[in-house]
Length: 439
Image (cartoon, rainbow, N blue to C red):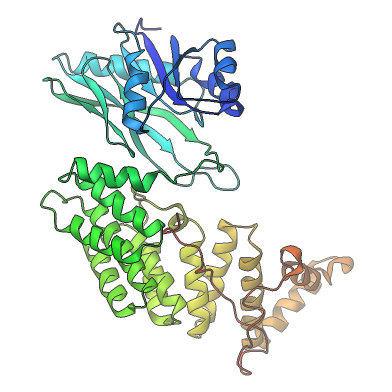
């Protein structure tokens, strides 16, 4: 090792089930320091048994910045690097070596005095197969002196000294979040209202407050708060501005003001045309309204954007099956059967365990074969010449199997009748019930 003293610090409450996994990861540090804010289970004892230093603190009234500042106060002054994590998070193995190497390399290349923070990749959510879904860069690593936490919720570490701040990017270091679904975010709204009251010029807190109002279905409050955010002179980050406009559009739709929703979606796209999120959200609304040309155009445009942003604004579903799903459904209704088939196949490739996507693909394949009977006959002849006799009935069996849904229930597609000129099969449908505006 390089001789740097690395300390991990955290806050916790009733998280005994995470202790062993977390300590297995954080144990690479020289010290692990935890502030327990009132556990009633065995969290504190389990942490001590694994070698952590545990301090009991009561934070009343509750606010996250105060809790983290108390935890940081227990980190010794001679710590070179402070690493803040939560117990439902885990670093990749070897993170300490990666951090030290990057830190030392930066010090060698930038010898002038500076306050250093660490920048690393954070997997905020995972796909069902365990691969990263939403990822962005985090900065919760810092030097010891003159750093403090700010904001009652959505807190961030702030430098209050006089040195210039420099970021050390730690390549290969990844912190993965395994959230506890039993934890409530019920206090977030009250704490965000407090944050905006304490810091009325903080654009970040006002944006988060508007978004939280939306999560709570307080549509009018969300619209007015986010419009206020957009009017702030310091609200200049175009990705976040676009996201605010996207949220306003969603709220307008929920209020039955679809003309306003369209206007705000157009503004969201124009504000930051290089990200997929506004296109996909707009396409979802158009799909719900059965505006197939707009749905296809927007979803197809989203697919043309190949580079994913590395900020928290990115939405995992925009980089999964959703854009192809929307393209497949809208292309089907537009009579673009080959394009529908291409996108339906791609959607299933990206999300193979989704029965609705599988059913959509079966329906579209059936429609395409019915529209080109000669080609289908040729394909059948080729199949008979190239497959063993006992496999000749397999495609039909596969089609029957792929039409089954969990619990035997029918999808929305299966409940809808297709016009008679489309082979008598039900049409494919798209999932517009769950979007990236969900809490």
